[in-house]
Amino acid sequence: MSTSEIYLGLMSGTSIDSIDAAAMTFSGGKLKLLGTYAEPIPARVKQQILDLCQPGKDSVQLLCETDNQLGELFAQTALALMQAEGIHPEQVAAIGSHGQTVRHSPPNSGAIAFTQQIGDANIIAARTDCHVVADFRRKDMALGGHGAPLVPAFHKTLFSCAQTNRVIANIGGVSNITALPRERSCYGFDTGPGNLLLDAWCAKHTGQSFDDRGSWGATGEVCQKLLNQLMGHPFIAQVAPKSTGREMFNLAWLETQLSDFNLKPQDIQATLVSFTAQSLAAAINELNEPVDEVYICGGGVFNDQLMAQLQIALGPRALHSTEKLGLDPTWVEACAFGWLAHQYINNQPGNLPSVTGASREAVLGALYRP
Image (cartoon, rainbow, N blue to C red; front, side, top):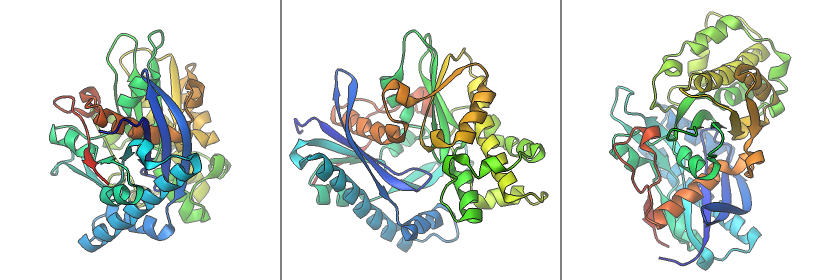
């Protein structure tokens, strides 16, 4: 295996807004971030991904074409970062690519358990001339786990503190938490929607892909009746381990929830902000140990309305961005997949059974050579 020390992480999440790339090194268990780059996902490709996420518009032809297109986009993103930072292929130990999830069926869904990420890693390896580690989730699922969330293992390595009970909350398209108690093992789970409903509703009514700083939602009023209905979704009260995605929470589902309401679009947006904040806060408030500090990463940290409501719902607990712990909240997930590649190359486990429900720890991923 290569003696190179640089790892790249490539991440495209449930929000389907961009491919995020981060270059990093690891020394003494510490991460050093070398550079970052984001490549927007073209609107046409985003629509293809959305079609693949829902039965009815999907097809094998569309799956294969989009897999190929995303492979090229992931490779383009990695190469742009390497060029910007002066990184040569021989310096890269491995690129960790999450791919793009197009369907996730967890073990407790009532159907066959599977997860599918696309973005052909063979193309990434061929274009970059680097080793690529991909397909991180399916080994965990083969061991009875959910294959998600995977970031808590990285959070544990990077953010644990022997003196403080911490929670790391990732608010991407979906929200998830990592509990890092002082006297117990790390655990975590998906809590419900993050930005995906907010983004979908905003795009439909304003033409903007997201509500910048939450300013549009701030003009609306929360409908308590609708909020109570949304909070009554069975997933919110479901016992962990649990994971979710666009299969469960999407614009079509939201519109079925609105059939008995006649509300202004901005009032619905305000209510969705409360739904994200309260479902996340409820998961934190109901943990089995005290929580001293909560740190947020992911795009949700930039929604001022969401952060303000989350602070109210969490009470006196300290609420910060992961920036305070030394890592920009925008790049935490991309770094997590660089770390997962590092774990693979060093034959170390990448999952936490206490999070995913897998029967044991395992080295995650598969290697694609250039």
